[in-house]
Amino acid sequence: MDLLLDGLSHAFALILRGDPQVMEIMWLSLRCSGLATFLAILAGIPLGARLGLIRFRGRRLVLGVINAGMGLPPVAVGLFVSIFLWRSGPLGFLDLMYSPAAIVIAQVIIALPVVTGLTAAAVQQLDPRLLLQLRGLGASRRQATLQLLTEARYALFAAMMAAFGAVISEVGASMMVGGNLLHRTRVLTTATVLETGKGNFDIALALSILLVGLTFVVAMALTLLQQRERRP
Amino acid sequence: MSQPLVIEARRLEARYGSRTVVSVDRLLLASGQTLALLGPNGAGKSSLLRLLALLERPRRGELSLFGEAVTGQERQGLRLRRRMATVFQAPLLTSGSVFDNVARGLRFRGLEPTVVWDRVDQWLRRFGIAHLAGQEARTLSGGEAQRVSLARAFAVEPEILFLDEPFASLDQHGREALALELEEVLRRSRIATVLVTHDRSEALMLADEVALLMDGAVRQIGSVRDVLAHPADADVARFVGVENLLPARVVQRQGEVAEVSMAGRTFRIPRAQELEGDITLCVRAEDVHLTAEGGAVEDGRVSLDARVQRIVPFGVPYRVYLDAGFPLVALAAERTLRRLDLREGSALVASFDPSRVHAVPRRATLPSPPVEG
Image (cartoon, rainbow over all chains, first blue to last red; front, side, top):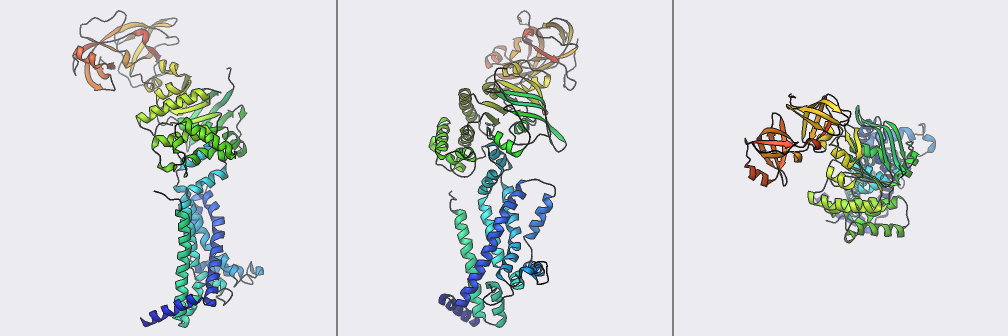
């Protein structure tokens, strides 16, 4: 119990003091996961919308693969990205292994199926006649899709939150492709694992509190955006 | 035809899976006309409307809109769709205010905000919903929402308007009120309109022409009055509300007049050209008069001894189900019921005026009582 109380008081001291190393780690986490989520949204929403709206042969198979991808283990993603980025791997010439870019790549792969799958589900949830109605009012394909995404925006925000939650909290991929290098690729989750292993529970607790806090702040911001015009 | 054609469809066919839902040989709509696609549920009316409105692709066939052959190309489709507008059974409003909804089609067309404002305002007023402009569209009642949907379609000033059962989601009162408003707007604007409905009174009220659809095909096309008065076959007759479809046989024919025999009686009917052999007589329930047993029947009427089987209140008149050796339905006012002291089992004389009978060729599928005489 003392361990916990000591750890907590120490952790809050670190946070309130704005310990530069802790802040640096938090900032890198936010940048990597924020960018990865943003890229996943950029690609995943149009992709999900198409999958949800357009019928083609093999659509169910593609949807099934994407839905399965939502549960992709970060460790497996880390392994595959490592193989590709390894010096002797197919993308080794890019020299991205153990860089923040490598973390972003791995996290995009984790977040993309989440955004795509949930977007497809959100669009399919809408009344299928709405698309006919929009086309019947003279909407181009693009205009109709944008309008349908607007109609599904609550679910889309939920998809964004789920994607951010998945990447900010993963440790396996970041550890494998980032390498947990101080001042370079150390993020909140990998640092927590390291500090816990070393027995530095105060630092580990501080990092965890920051991780939970960060997740909460981002989710809350998205929730406020999501609910801003919801009136009874 | 004096007016140019805005729709010209030939051998248009649509399928869902292996089922053919639309198979229309020829369908025309002239500018300024309203065509009702009338038919029972599942007749393919809405599917046909979606083909004509370029919302679905036909499996085969030719379609010209505004004199231009439809190629199926996306760019051409968009350009043509922007000259038309569709209203569905459900209002299908988007989130946002009533104003936003009515502005939607105009914004899709990239019109100037001032134009958008003017048009929206004009059509909100025309449908009596200007006071709702700022309200969230989701909070509207059914009638208000359907008015928004109509205003949204009219606001784009379409050259063809497609209405797919626009009143079906409303209650009786709301339906009549909105149909009256729409009738006035259509009459004034003279927009070419395709109206899908299963309600013949809506067709009568709103349309110039009617195409009667059954099983995906056009069974009859003509002026609304003509189709209602002279259905082409027994199915159409049944659909347009003819309750007595009586099997008969042509004995001989002189020009338009045929001598027919039915249930042991022989009489003459008009407008019987081209009818031979077995036919079906269409006798509307309101044309069947009831007289007391042994009472005098006007000269020239076909009289049948009958017995009352059931009396069912139906709107203002009562519907009287009779057994005249075959089933027969009559409509009777309450006054008549009291005067004749009718109850189930009462014997009476039912009669109809043969000159008001419309005859159609017999169809093999028609379930009918056995022919006598």
